[in-house]
Structures are given as structure tokens and as C-alpha cells.
Amino acid sequence: MINYKEVLLKKFQESNNPKAIKRYEHSLCVAKRAVEIIKEHNLNIDIKKAETAALLHDYAKFLTMDDFFEIVKENNLPSEILENDYIILHALLGPYVIKKELGIEDQEILDAVKYHTTGKANMDPLQEVLFVADFTEELRPNVENIREISKRDYKRAIALILEYTINLLISRKRKINPLSLEAFDYYRKYLVLDLSKIKKVVKTIEDDHNLVKDIKVYDARQNTPYYDFVIIATSPSLRQMKAAANYLKMEFAPRMIEDGDFWVLIDLNDIIIHIFLEEQREYYGLDKLLKDVPEIELD
Image (cartoon, rainbow, N blue to C red; front, side, top):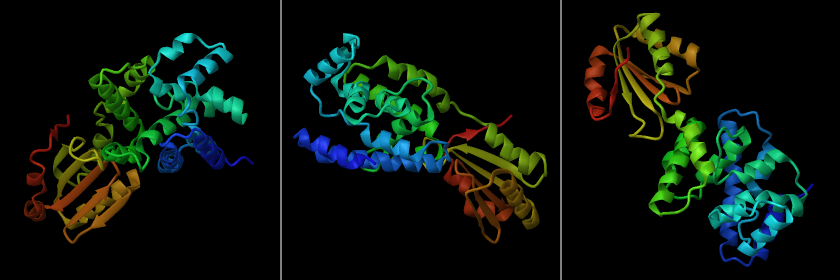
């Protein structure tokens, strides 16, 4: 069985590029992050295949323009591909190098490598995972917010990565590949406010069982990457408060439920729910703390 870590290290070292070791460490971290994303979201993706694609995604990183010219010529590819920004050619042409030098013919792996920088509309799951992993691996600086969001909602992370990249290229007056524009046009729908889960929460504890009142919903997406919304509600009694938490537990399988003497916190991953008895809601004053966070009015 081929040890792709050793193969990649040798390939990078042969380039004599001073950034070779740093790029190798990046590739290892991308492979690690790809596996994390698959497990975080319980995706039906072969782990070994994902690790291989992630390890080799930058296999052609240190090739020269002359190398890329030869690849285009050898594979009878349209010469227009060389008009793309040099920085993405290692992705667009990398699959041909990987196939020739390593004998990998798995099209899912090759396509994931091809689109890991530009993305494309309606990527398959492996392509999506590699696209996100490349941007959110632990060594990449200044992406903490998107990294945290990717742990909860990787589709939204894709849209945010595309938006960030396109804006960065515009600010630097760099060429934007049409694939990235098409990808953003497709994935931008994941940036649209979706109230369906919030309405389901409210229906569960208020409409169906009448266990809470005075519900406030806050949109925290611009304030923190750790969750999207905060719901604060008042329960008339301790018994009703506990019952509300139990109904939410049955309906949503929370990540965590924390009980106080007169309050309960339910963590639904993207929604944090605080239920208080009336005096404790006033005492803790969370509504005042969130006064600058946009409030959502539900129909």
C-alpha cells in the first residue's frame, strides 16, 4: 500500500522550494480537518479516500509555468486554461500529474483536487469537504470564525469562504475564476436566514404544550461563530420549565442541557435556548446583555 505522506514529502523536497515543509505540514492538517468534518457531520464519505485527496490536493503546488504548459500539451487540453491565475493552476492541472505519477484514477479524488481552490456549483460531498478543510485547517491564520461555523454548518462555511475569497480577489484586482462565481451563486442560499428550526422550537415549547411565554429570539450570527441564534423564554413554574427541556430533548437531541435551580440552558448546536422562571430572568438580565443583538420577530 502506497504511503502518500512519504510520496508527498519526497515530491515537495525535490522541488527545493523553501516553502516545501510548510506546505507539507499544511497538507497533513488538511487531511486531519477533512476527517474531522466528515465525523462532525456524519457524512457518508470514505475516510481513506478523503485522506488521500486531502494529502495530495497540493501535489502540483511547486510546478512551474513550463511544467503546466507541458501538461496542457501532453493531455491535449485547451490552451486557455493557462490564462488562469498561476495560483490556481496546481489545482486545475494537479489531477493530471497525480494520475500520471501516482497512477490514481479515482475520479472522485481527482475532481476533489481539481476544485479545491475555485469550488464549483453543486459540489459532491468529497469536493465540499476538501474545499472547506483546505480553508479551515488549524495552521491557517485569521479564519477562526469560519472554522467554528464549519463545525456546525459546513454548507454555510462554503458560502462564506467563497464570499471571502471573491472579495479578497476583487480588492487585490486579481482575476476571479468563473467557477468560483458560479459556486457562490449556488451556495449563497446557505447565507439566507432560515427560521424553520426556530419556529419548530417555539412550536414545541409554546404552541404545542404552552410551557413558556415572553419568547425573545436574537440573531447572533454577526456576533459569534459558535451559534446562530439565542432564544430566551419565561416559564411559569419549575415543573413547566423542566417539561419544556424534556420536550426539546425528545424533539432535537441537544448537544447539552444544563440545569440550574431556577433556569435551564439547552444547546441545540446552532441555537442556544435559555428558559428562566420570571424572577430569575429579570435577575440575570440576558435580554439587556443582548440589547444590541438584532431581535427576530416571528409570525
